[in-house]
Length: 141
Image (cartoon, rainbow, N blue to C red; front, side, top):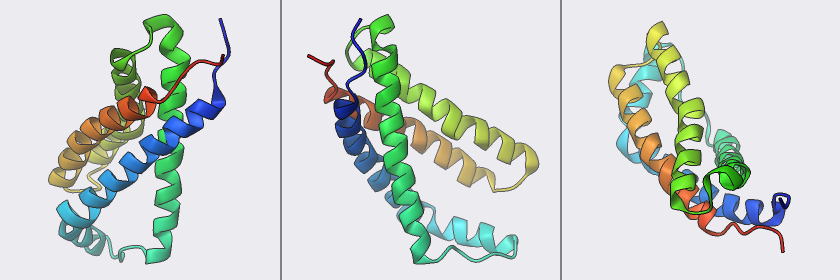
């Protein structure tokens, strides 16, 4: 068994990160913007400054690279292809979105519409981003 091709993980991860970042922008700036503003106001907070966006952009790329790395790591067991990429995407979604959403809902931190919309959106986003990023992955020669 060959090692993971880190160059291809990063390449695919950048593509996945672009998808994550575009999708998250659309979700939070177009779909849920007013809901987030109301949620933050109810907690006595304001929306983060524009300078905080850089952190989220970097976060999106790190998640993309992690998703493609996970695909590469499970590929020997499940085989190359979109089915394995979907498994990796669902795993990323499960740990990064679903579990925190359950905790946030349990604590009553955010409105249900924010949590439900974000969780469903992220499910689709994680699968699409991981499949597209994994499409670029190749084992080392």
